[in-house]
Image (cartoon, rainbow, N blue to C red; front, side, top):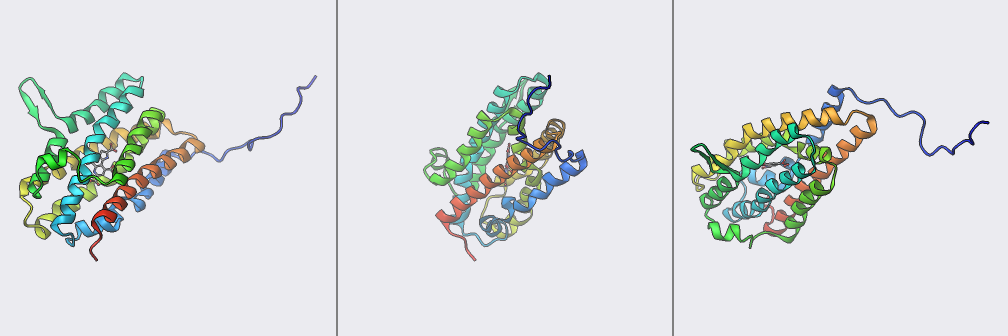
Length: 248
Ligand SMILES: O=C(O)c1cc(C(=O)O)c2c(n1)C(=O)C(=O)c1cc(C(=O)O)[nH]c1-2
């Protein structure tokens, strides 16, 4: 006897998966929503920001800087693949620094604190987070919480906004010394280091994403995840724009 017909809950055929090239192009297209286009960032990188606005950005962004290695530790804690972990752990060292066999690297968090003093903030007022806007905390915490709870491949995918980060760091390196001569030049080291680190991160993150999200529904999910992260970065800028204003 035939089993009873099940009601159809989803179409029998799914649209075909995009090729790796098509999928990668769709991920890269999302760069149009990157915070490089946010009015607060456009103001910063075109030289219209006041010292107060630059300091506000540096102090608020510190909250993102200290969250990133915690986010990366969450990815590690959810990932059962030692080969992925071996590559991913580098991100924590990039931000927290290390001392190994006589080689010392101060790491990105310390470099950010040097940026803070270069723009005229004290380390204390940055480290105690007194300037961080509540909405900034909520946006950054959303990223860490996502990485804690999502499947690790989605957390990896959410880091792919770094596809677009070298450009924003290069803008700062090119424009800030001219627009903001009052910033001590050694403060810019963070951005210089990140250009190559972000490229290396993206190579790893993209390889994992292209290998894992191989059906159309998974690929569409990856685009949603990337959009979530773009929205988090956008919301961080909204929080700073509200607190410090945007100079036209
Ligand atoms: O200055 C920026 O605009 C910017 C953006 C992003 C990003 O796209 O998430 C990162 C960074 N910087 C950055 O410096 C950094 O170390 C970093 C790590 C990650 C991540 O998601 O793991 N994003 C970013």
